[in-house]
Amino acid sequence: MYRSHPLTRSVFWVLLVCLFTAGCDSAGDNGDSTPIVAPDGLDAAIRTWLQQNVLPFETVEPNDDFSDLEPLKEIIGDARIVSLGEATHGTREFFQMKHRLLKFLVEEMGFTAFAIEATMPESFFVNDYVRAGEGDPAKLLSGLYFWTWNTQEVLDMILWMRQHNEQTTGPGVSFFGFDMQFPREAMDHVSAYLESVQPDSLDYIREMYDCFRAYQSSVSTYSDASFTIQNTCATNVEALYNFMEENKNAYEAQTSPEAFALALQHARLVIQAEDAFSSSPAARRDDYMAENTRWLLDEWLGPDDKIVLWAHNYHIAVSPGTDFGTQGTTLRRWYGDDMVIMGFNFYTGTFNARIRENGQTGALQRHSTPVPPEDTYAAHFDSARIPLFFLNLQGLPQNDPALQWLYGPRRFRSIGAVYNSAQDANYYYQANLPEEFDVVIYIRTTTPSVLLPFTSAAGKTPPGPPLFR
Image 1 (cartoon, helix red, strand yellow):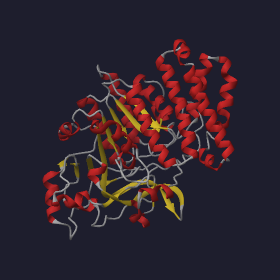
Image 2 (cartoon, rainbow, N blue to C red):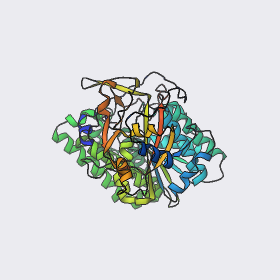
Image 3 (cartoon, helix red, strand yellow):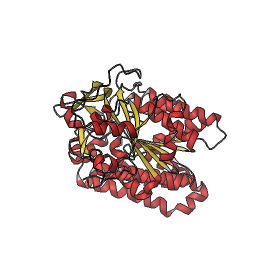
Image 4 (cartoon, rainbow, N blue to C red):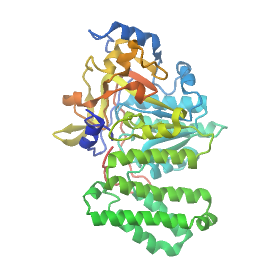
């Protein structure tokens, strides 16, 4: 999903191969029994600066009060977007803290929407539960297909969202996805819509989608298809999208502008999936996740809605000057200071990830990390002897000699869905944190997310594994 070998961002994408299966359950508490001892050799001035400038918080537990989160109100201000990252895809405390922050932003700051790095069509089914109580939330979560989100922590958040909507007298909160990796449900939605408004178009729909449907459950093989096949698929899915646009007025009159907009967006998702899997998937995927986020904000939601985004640190970060533009880079260009980006970092602990050995991705299992070297951000953060804190990076003077360590470049840990502890040094990249994030959320010690079994959602067999995570 993000960086299996993040020596640089470009090296990461060349080496990235992630295949997912369901894994065993794993649990842990939030206790930290290891002593906090400042590493030898670290600059005492840096330690002092951190102790004087970070904002400690008390807990990651979602159900605790928000008194320790009050400083975030000034940091976030009137921003319409808050992006929440994660330094691994299998960390319980990251997920709990994101749940806690979502509650805070909804209940205290008027946020009304949530969107996760998951396939958009299936996420609308989760939203049906969140908004109206329709469906089995565990099955719907499983229907997002990825072990990374199929956890007790994410399910607890979805259950809270439903409870909040049942109890609030306000606008409530909605659940969305902004990914485009699986085209099957999108094609099903378009086909059903067109059948309802123009039954005589069924043969044309099949003709336009049959080429790409052959890969709907095994998109990882699409890149190996011949140029002729890929060109035919691309031409056809684009033609169907154009066909819908040409009939917009008639279709809206038969249904509604909202129903047509939703169907057209699903047709757009099919185009995105085809293009991503036939060209440079890493770069195109981030472009399309940004596009889908903008569609949610500017087309689907109202002008007063505010949204919380959930993705890996890599995706939410602003990363100018790299080989691949990120979702965060594009969104920053579009929304500027109307977005606040919060990345996560940790010192040591355990988490879930698939094993990466000899160039192959293997079983999902629990991993442990060694203590970070002294030249890393995590080592300096740990020297402050504060186990949980926010570091506000906004407005720091770059020319201040006391802050040169913070501007780096310095090694910053980044683990996606795969890991090998014997190659831990590969899971760092050279970062400049104030350029990439507005806030860093530091959680010293971590435990694995609690994985759930996969269950069939909506009577459909899950598609094959994603090409990339």
